[in-house]
Every structure is written in structure tokens, then in C-alpha cells.
Image (cartoon, rainbow, N blue to C red):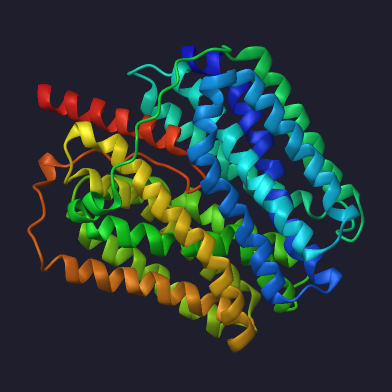
Length: 417
């Protein structure tokens, strides 16, 4: 493990800086949009645009890397991110912001794909699981730190837009100076959606619903805070609580998932998240209750992402796992694009509590569907299931394929015992 850290510390530091920059710009736009007087619908379009760019990049960037190489793609996309971040306060128009968010989503996905391919090259069979855990932890910690930076300057000014631009620019240096410029790179063609649905209807439906829930957390939480009348420190704490909950519950849920019927666990975890969302909708007068509800929602929905991938793998051959993961990420991306738009409508119709109500509907629908699927076919024996690998919903196909390799390594070790 120390050998891995010696090889990858600069990469992880760079990813941390990238995540701080990304986490800050997302929350900042939600706050600044309220200051600029943008409507909830306009902000929902702005937030949805990020996921459109992210999804498009997951298909396009691998070919870019093959054509011109990791270093050029990484440096070019990071430069575009820095430029767009500076343009946001200069051109305060929701439709220009939406275009900028498409570009930002595309570029962040691209730099994540590049960084994750270097991470894959730095990991060995013995360190792959710990590498995944560290990478996920760095991602979440970066987003949490970003919320604290929201308080260092006036969101109505320029400084808070300059900070993430600087962080992204600095992040390039340790990664490019320390990482090998030419790791092997080859992503698997996604499995057809029809075949993926036949293999795991719950995996497909769950990933689509979770896309909307994750988009609510990453895209619309600051918009909710502004509509609900929260102060800037309260918005910062509210957004951070989603990811603190994710860190606290990711590994316990993962440990349990390797020891029971995953469909039952999906039902329980999504049900708890749905109830927490209902409590959030009812707790408009209590900030403490809002924080607890957000922590529970984040602590259940983020592990569900990894749990659904692991569950789908239980019904696939090893040769199909990588292709299936690409299809699952595509489905999740579709849900993430639709999520902010529907939440924007919900908040216009029901008021700020519509933010929590929609997440409650999505998570409870997942719980109900998981319960119904339990009646349709028998679960595989626990001894025959694949290992749970922790992943953040911001992961790209490269990280998910790394997780697949880890799951196969664990299965191989168990088969030898």
C-alpha cells in the first residue's frame, strides 16, 4: 500500500483539488443564481446541463485520448474549465451559464477519465481495492471542503469564481509532473440496453432513479437552500451534510451487502433514504432536521450506486461486467439530466419542500420496485455473489471498470480458499 501511495499521492492530490473546484462551482452557481434573480426553472436547466456534458464526454473523451494522448487531453480540458469558471460572473445569463455547464461537465468528465486511467496504471492486484477506497474518499472529501470555501468571500462578487479556477489550474501540475504520460487505455463497449435490462431490471431502474437523486444533491441543493431562505453558512453545511453521510455509511453498507440478499438491502436502504426525504420535506422550520435528513439521504443514496452495480454483476458473466457498467452509467446519466428539470418543476409547484418530495418519490419507488423484484426470481447464493466496490456517483467508466477488476480479483481469491 505504501508503494501505491508513493506512486499515486500526486495524482490523488490533483484529484482532491479538482473535486474542490468542481464542488465549489456547483454550489456557488446555485447561490449566485438566486442573487441574480434567476427562476427555479432557469436554474434547473443550468444544473441539468452539467450532466448532459458529463454523459456526452463519457462517450467522446476515450477516442480523444486514443487520438492525441492523455497529457494533451488533460491539459486542454483543464484549461477550458478554468476559462469557463472566470466567464460565469462576467456573463450572468442563465442560458449562457447552461452552455458553460455543458462545457464544464464535458471537461470535468474528461479530466476524471484521464486521472482514473493513471490511477488504474498505478494500482496492482494487491492495492486495487484500497486504491478505489482512497479515490472515492478523496472525491467526497474534496466536495465537503468546497462547501467551507463558499464562506471565504461574497458569492455576489468574483473571488469565489477565481478560487476554483486557480485550484483546477494548480491541480494540473502534480498530476502531469508525477503521472506516467502513456498508461494503457482501453474502455469496453457498453452492453446494449435491451440485454442489460434482461440481465438486471432492478439495476437499470435503480440507476435511472438514483440519477435523479444524485442530481438533486450535486446540482439543486444550493438552489433549494436559496429558495428555503437558508443563510450562506447554512447552505454550506446543508450541501456538505449529503457527502458527510456518504462517507460515514458507504463502507458499513458495503460490508453488509457482501453478506445478504442485495435486493433486500436495496429495499431497506432506499426505504430509509425515502423516509429521510419525507422528514426533510416536513422539517422546513428546523435546520437541524434538514441536516439530519440530508445526511441520511446522502448516506443511503451514494452507497446504493455501488450496491446496484454489484447487484447487477451478480447476474453477469465476468466477460460482460465491464460492458454492463458502461450501460448502467449511461442510464444513470439520463436520470441525472432529467432530475434537475423535474425538481425545478416540483419546487415551483410545491414550494421548496418539493425538493425533498421528489427525492422521496424516487427513493421509495426504488424500494417498492426492489421488493417486487424479490418475488420474480430467486437470489443467487451469497457465496456466489461478487464483491462490493465503493464508488462515488461522479465516477467515470474507467473507475467503474477498475472496480470490476477489483471484484473479480476478490472472487478469484475466494475461489482459491
